[in-house]
Every structure is written in C-alpha cells, then in structure tokens.
Amino acid sequence: MTTADRPVTAEEIASGARTVQHLYDYLCELRKNASELEETIAPVDRGYFVADEDDATRGLMVSYWQTRNALLELVNSFRERVGSISHAQPAEFLVPYAAALVLVDTARFVRGLAENRPVVRRKLNEPATEFGVPGGTYDTIQKSLVSSRNAWHLSRATRYFDVHRDELQSFAEQNDLATLFEITVRLRDCVDVSKTQYAKAKVATRFDQCLRWLGRSMIMQSTYSVQKLTAGMMADVFVKRGHVPAIPATIANELSDVLQPGDVIAVRKEYAVTNYFLPGYWPHVAMVIGDEIVLQEYQNTCAGDGDSKTCQQDATLCWQSVLANGSKLCVIESMKDGVHVRSVSSPLGSDSFVILRPQLQRAEILQAIGRGLRHVGKPYDFNFDFRRSDRLVCTEVVYRSFEGVGPIRFPLVERMGRPTLSGLDLIEMALRRNHFAPVALYVPDESPILQLHDEIDDVIRRKSER
Image (cartoon, rainbow, N blue to C red):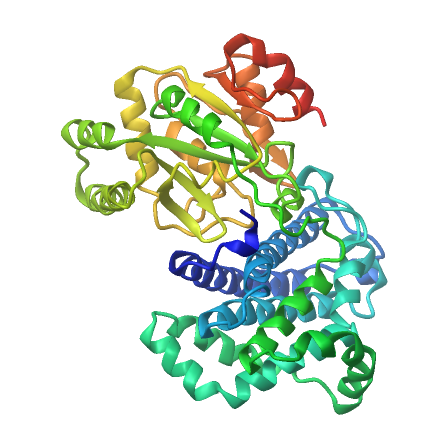
C-alpha cells in the first residue's frame, strides 16, 4: 500500500493540530529568547561572537531548524495523501495551512535578526553537525521565503481561507480545532502578498499548474497550494514521495515475542524529514511499557502518591485506551505532537530498528515505567535541552525514566552549550554493555531476517558510524 492509498485519519488530524499548537507556543518562546539575546549581545559592533553568544545564537538556529523540519514533515504527510483524492475535508486544509503560516511567520522573524547584519548572518549560516544542521541553512530558508512561486501558492490558500472563514470557524469549533483556528487567524495577516508580486508569480506558475487544477474543488485547490508552498520550502531536504516506512509483518510478529517491558526501540526511517534534525543513524527512540499483563502488574505494585499518582492514573488510562483499540503492546514515545502512550506500531512504522534492553530487575523496570508515565502529555522539546523537564525529546523519555533506577547513570554529552543524549549515545552505551545491551536488529540492506544478540554488534557499529 502506498501512502496515497491511506486516507488521513481522525487521530492524524488531532495529532497534527497538537503539533501546530505546541510548535506555535514554542516558537513564541523562542522569539522572546531571541529578542532578549539581540538586546544583550553586541557582535555587530564587535565584529565577532564570544563563546556564550556563539552557543546561544547557534542554539537558536538549531531550535528553529528542528521546528521548521517538524512543520515541513507534518505538511508533507498531508501532501502525500490529500493530493491524490478528489475532495479534501476542512481539517485537511486547516492543519497544513496553519503549519504553513507558522513556517512563514517564523522565517520572517529569523530574517529580521540577520537583516543588514552580516556577522549575524554568517553565524546563522554555520553548520551544526552535531545536530544535523548543514551549512548555509539561513540563506536556504530565506531563499524559499522570498520565492514568488511560493508566495503565489500561499496567497491562493489565504484567499480561500478569507472567503470561507466563517464556515471554517464553525467546523473548527465543532471538531476540537478552535485553538488551531485562533492561531491561523492570528498569523493570517503576516502572509499578505503585494499585487505586483502576485501577478509576477501568477505568470510563472499558472501554465504548468492549470491542467492539474481542472476539476478540483476550491478547497482542493487551496489545499494543493499549501502543499506546493511547503514542497518549495523543502528543496534542501531529500524525501522520496510515496515511500511508506514499515517493518514487514513477519519481522514485526517475530519481534513481538522478543520485546520486553523497558526495552528501548531505536529506529530509522529512510527519506524522512526527521533524519535532518536529529543526529546519528538512529535518530528516534521509544520505550516499551508492555501489554495488558504488564499494565495489571504495574497497577498492583507501583501506586504513586499526590500529583504523581494522579498523573500516572491519567497515563494508565491512556495505556488502557491504546490496548482497547487493538494494540497488543504499548510504548511511551515523544514525537512532534508530544509525549504519548502509543501502539508499538508507531515506532515500527520505520525501515530499520535495533532493540536495547536495560540490565535491570523486574521491579526496577516497573519503577522506570512509572517514571516515564509521569511525563505523558508533555510537549516535544525542539530545543533538545535536558536541563528542563517540561518538554521532552524522544531520548529524554528514556533518560527521565531510567536515570537513577538501580545502577543506571547516563553520561550526558554537552552539545552547543546544552547537556544532551542522542540515539547514538544510547547505542554506544549498549555496545559497551553499559547498563543496556542490544538484543535484536533489523536492517534490510544487511539481512532480510531478524538478527539476535551477539551477532548484531558489528552491524550496529558499522551502521552507527555512517
């Protein structure tokens, strides 16, 4: 089945809306921090950045790069599916349109930081290889921002929003998308395009699109414009349209007999936008919490107290809900829409994986699961900063769950002035048998079968060095 064969689900729409809301809030905070940074440093007058200014400024760009790619991935996931059907629904327009507005508004703010400041522009163009950020990022992003063709597509979508604003608002209020609609209204004025710019882009774009537009509804045309806008903004990111990452059913069935509570699943998706803002060959991880038997065992032995108990109860209800919807096994996983209990099929929607097992007793595993459940519902940390726990990146779920349980201590690595733990760091710990051990591996270009235990170390090491 190709991506286009699968319709956008209600859960994907809800997840997309949460992602836009989290990113909008985060980018507002990022903008505030950037404004404070702008007021307190003087590299323009001095002609160079001192060490702490360098870390702060490059950290700002890394955070922006991560959020940008998360938004692009979100719109691209809608683009893969909506573009192939005959009629788009209001939510299939609203979610990617709001994401596109956040993209454009933030890109304009970043442009303001470096405009007429060559020393700042040079700094924002420097690579940050430890976070997967290539050189020239600022110029690439700004080039897409000033593209007449991109402006034309955004203008088309905005015209549709203006004409159908009342019905879109009514739909949003009836479908738990009111906050998303408010964000859209707030940012709508930032995308007005001049008549001259619109006419210039119209001439360049109209002919090669007109045949595709024949027979499309107005909402489909407008959704298509949002898709084409973000496609233009993704020129620096390599993806493969139609590729659906998925572990073969036979491998997934074998793996279900291998997985145990507490296992860490490190995964890779080929051709994924997310590969461009998390470091290493294995850029994403999830933590296995288990099935109905483990849930019952946890509830019988690991009652919390106070706020902790309430938080854990809410999370166990999520655990029960995911199991009730047909999943045999659950994970705690932080993705762009935040930290949630999900079916194991979520991380296994990948091309390759390695399973890392904590070297702990059963009671300690249950303790770690309880600690992980406390973080369910928190947003994703696009700042990749382990000094704060109100937002969590995927590897931080593992860190917050296991740090201090039994003998486990994680050697956090400082990257750009902030303590971090990457998927590669976890892999290296496991290869050294430092609190974790690799127990299973599936990499199809290495072997078509599920590989187990000691025979996998060399393959993991070779892949991790790429």
